[in-house]
Image (cartoon, rainbow, N blue to C red; front, side):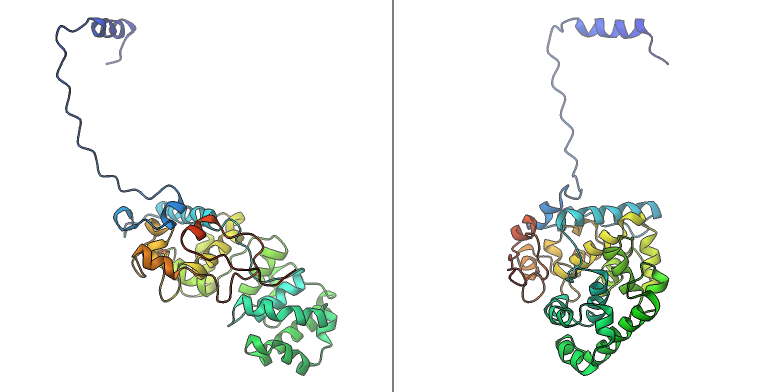
Length: 316
Ligand code: SF4
C-alpha cells in the first residue's frame, strides 16, 4: 500500500511521543566477512598477503564479467605503470621499425645499446639500404642473429626507398610487406610512431593474457583479435605497454611474484608463483642491468615494494 501524507504524519507523531522506558538496545548483527579486492593497486604491491582477500573469477565467468575484469586489470596496471612506454629508444618511425626488428630474441636494453652506433653511421633508409652488410653485421653482432637481422634491416631499408619514397608507411598492410616486419612489429610502429591503436602480442603479452584467462587462443593473431574485442580501440596501445611491463617486472615466465602483485585479486593464476609477500618482493625486477630507456622516475609503488631505482641507461 502506498503511504499517504496522513499516514506518514501519524507515524512521525507516534515517534515523537517519549517512551516511558528506554527500549533495550537491539543486538547488532554479526559483521559479515568482506572479501573484496583492495581499492588501490598500491595496497597490494606494498606487500600485504593477498591470499585471504582474493576474489578469483569464478570458473563460469560471463562475457560481461570478463570484460569488466579485463578492464579493471588494465586500470590497476595503469596506476602501477603510469609512465609505461615502448622501451626501445627511437626518434623517428625509421629508427623504431629497425629497433623493433632488432629486438627479436634479445632485450630492449641490448638493442638500445646497439642502435646509437647504427643510426650514427646510417641515419636514413637510403644510408642503410646502401650499406656494406659486413659492416652492419659487426655493429649488430651483440644483438644475436646478427646476419639475419642485418639482412632484414638492409632489406627493409631498400623496400622503404624503392616502394615508399624513403618513408615508413603508416598502414598495417604496407608495413607487413617490409622484410622482417610482422604484425607485432607493425603494431608497435603504428601505435608508437603514428598514434594508431594497436595490440602488441609479444611473448609477455601471450603469457599474461592466458594466465588471466582473457583468451585460450595460442596463435598471436587470434590472441590479438580476442583481446582487442575486450577493450575499446583507444586503449589498445597503452594496454599493450601495461601488460608487457607487468610481464617484465612482476609476472615472470618462471616465477611470477604473486605475493607482490597488484592485480592478484583479479587473477585466476594467483599462486602459480611465489605467494609469500617477502619472498615475492625479491622477485620484482627491471631488466638486467637497470631500467632500460629510463626517462621518468619509477613509481613509488615499485620502490615501496623493494624495487631499486636504476641509473639512466646512458648519460646525456
Ligand atoms: S600469475 Fe601471479 S604475478 Fe602473474 S598476474 Fe597473476 S597473481 Fe600476478
